[in-house]
Amino acid sequence: MNGLRAEAVSRYLAWAKLHSNARFNLAASGITDYPLAELPVQIKDLEIGGTGPYGYEPLMDRLARKASVPKECVVYTLGASMANFVALTAMVHPGDEVLLEQPTYDPMLAVLHHLGAKVHRFRRHAKDGFQLRVEELEGQLTPRTRLVVLCNLHNPSSAFTNDDTLRQIGAMAAKIGARVLVDEVYLEALFDQPWRSAFHLGPNFVVTSSLTKAYGLSGIRCGWILAEPELVHRMWQVVDFTYGSPVHPAELLAVIALDNLARVRERARMLLETNRVLLNEFLASHPDLESEPSHFGTTVFPRLRKGHAADFVKTLREKYETSVVPGEFFEEPEHFRIGFCGATETVRGGLERLGSALEIFP
Ligand SMILES: Cc1ncc(COP(=O)(O)O)c(C=O)c1O
Image (cartoon, rainbow, N blue to C red; front, side, top):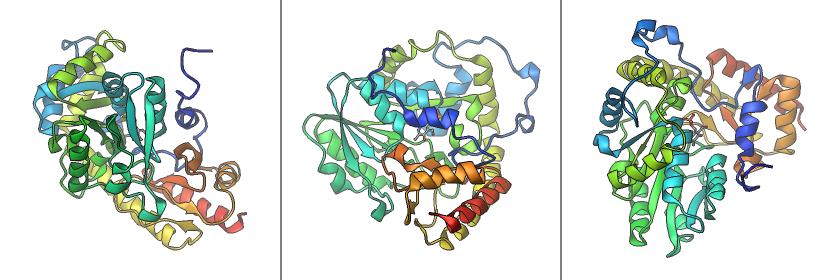
């Protein structure tokens, strides 16, 4: 046994790491890796050790500039995973009431259990395209709610929540002295429209994000939290549990990637644009899958109209060498998540196999 509570385990991440691999991987939600050789980097640009106990200053400058916030509001983390862990640990005490969306990114729920939070849920419904409904959330707020947690774009559906809706939620939370944590890791993939972080919507917003999903830079692990300076200090105390000094070569690579983000972004934008056309054609011609066409993000979360989705997903992987994420990991067992952010040939091949599997199933 270990020191984790039984429910404080992310079954989804264990599955994603150990069992999601397949010849045609439609389980991933992040753009396929950007080739290092395409970044203007040479070995002389890298160094083992550097200065900046909570982040290399040139990197902190760039992150602050990117988010249009003062540097004092940025916590550097290893990916959005660490950002969420650090932010939640700094804000949630045992017994605190936390309101979390459902379906959710499973590690959010696991970390909240780990922290001993009382987790309440508000639903996003498939019939609404998993759009966030303010009244649904308001119905679950209580005077004891300390924190509201959601993702924008939503994982697994990629539903987009606009600023007006977020502002209303921020105001409702502020009335009872609660904060709102918005995980914006997929918002970075909104390439075709200007957006600003929810951090700018009010002082009770805390935001987590990273360069991992939208740019194919997962291996660099560049993540961040945006928070009020007083909270930043508390978050650093949590960071102290995780490292003495940051991984400097990764910081240097992140600086180079940020300085060349326009080209990294363009490659991701073109890939997603091409793949989204394939996906939407596929969805339109497969009525066994209930799903709106994709407009945002890197994933869709259709419902299988026939048979058991878990059996279908299993058959798809075993007989058709194609993986998608079972809906059970998002508490929606009739659904599964399709990621269309791999190489176009992989996405095309995976969708063809998905179509063949649907023909013979159940
Ligand atoms: C909503 C959400 N937040 C955070 C993460 C973790 O991101 P990172 O790779 O930056 O650690 C993921 C990964 O799937 C995610 O879906």
